[in-house]
Image (cartoon, rainbow, N blue to C red; front, side, top):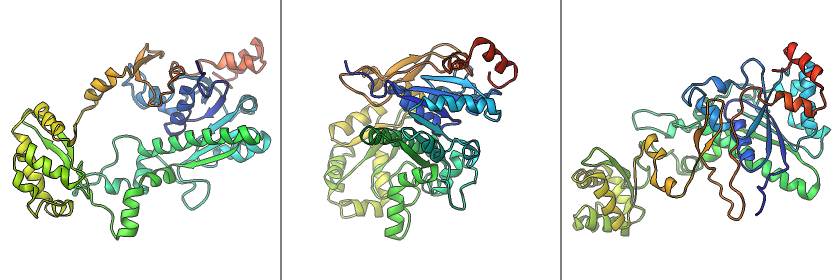
Length: 396
């Protein structure tokens, strides 16, 4: 059996919140050893976001499985020196401290890569190292606003933010792929190098369709709720049992099948007000009304059966509870449990599957400072020295 791709790779992360922790969790899932450096007085502040996961914070449980936690005061020169010792033996370093904080500590990517040429060092920030926004606070919702995502999400009457931390996740995935690319380059050149990712630039890349629509077409696509801005019908429609079904017609052949087999109004297939997508978008209210009338008379299961039989793309509008019980995820055996200080918790296998190798690693979620003593011992500190640092508050 092939090993996990990152077995033997050591990652040190001075990280907090979501963007960097979610990136390094991907590395841990693929077999890397990830050492998470936290503050002694509470640790990663995401630990305190909520208590929804059996008394633990749901964000933290999601982003931090499979890591080792060392609690160190980086403001104390002795603590900083300990972290430098960990970095000296690492392959990858990741940080998302406030802009400028890593540089003041000498932990910015440029400085570390100059000292350790084989190291891959990643700086994750809100807006990047330069420019007028470099030192601006960058929380996920704020970056969603700055990147324009909120302006194209919601209803015609009101913009809304995405229901997930889209800016954090975007930055995390580019940091993750940046590490993999840099490690591949190191394998051929022997050198690691800095990697820089900003939340704004990551999310702006994800804004590709609205950006190109607006920059080249003259105006941004309108907010349309769950409807599609330039395709009709493409929306969620209520069914007789209180459910909602989303359907998408991608071409005019599908529209004719929908009209005949689902709406039971074959004449609409050739009606010039509906026969083309351009016409259906121009007459969106009438198009939606025709679909809504047909689906309102049947329950959700029947609506989906008719749509599937007609070859029309469709889906249930699921709740979070529905997703947790989704039959497709169950059939593909995608659920596992991970250990935590509150006991085992359910979690989904990573979406990356590597046939012919072991499953992605889903290690336990660490308690704050759970591995401090063991990691200090690895650095060569004896029991008395470790105890002295703990008494002094340098570590916890």
